[in-house]
Structures are given as structure tokens and as C-alpha cells.
Image (cartoon, rainbow, N blue to C red; front, side, top):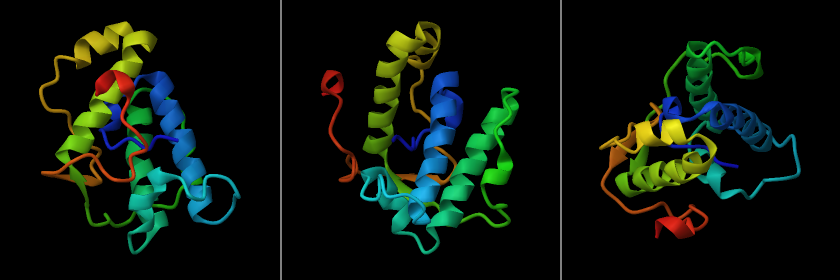
Length: 149
């Protein structure tokens, strides 16, 4: 499961669809509707909020907005309406950089054309849920990608 901190516009079609599906799975985990993934590290930052489902639904609404922009048909009824914006979650700049390099590594094989375009990005944008702050890779991040260390 990868709940990207990057803006979803950076993802290729495979990545965006996977993010939507994994986000919906994360939602079920947070609601106690599944036995798997309950200790998944990607859920830590949502669990530490006052209302994890609301925060995750806001996260997924942005993914949905990107899907609409691309002409996809993700089912918005799978999440609650996002009538208010949750407080931004702090995201260390090194975590964003790490995830961007991780995405580039995936795109190099999966979608070379997008890889070529994105590797020229000086500073990637985060998902709108996050506010960038100076800092290292998050402690919940499983392990560095070997080709990026």
C-alpha cells in the first residue's frame, strides 16, 4: 500500500488507479472493516489525526478530482462528502523528495515518457493535504528504495 504524499497529478494511469483502490482499502482498515493491513505504516499519519476517516476522505477527494480531470470514472460515493477541509498534515521535505524519487524509479520502467518529463521537476508539489516542513524521511517509511540510497 502506498498513499503518496505527492500531488496525484504526477502519477501515471496505473499509479492513480492503484492509489484510489489502496486509499479505499485504507479507509476500510481505519473503519475496522478488514483484518488485513491494520498495522500498515502508511496509515500512521491518518490515525494520529482527530478524525482519520474525514482526513482520508479529503485525501481521496483530491485523487478523485485528478481522475475526473483525466476523464476517468472513479466512484465518488465510496467516500463521505468533504464539506470542510481538515488541518494540513506536516510533511518533511525529505519525505516528499524520497517519494518523488521512488515514483521516478517506478516510472523509468513503467512509463519512460512520463519519467523523462517528471525528472526535470525541480521541486515536486505535495498532495494538498500536506504542508511541507524541513525534516527527514518519516519514521513510518518502511525502507529506502535501494536504487535511491
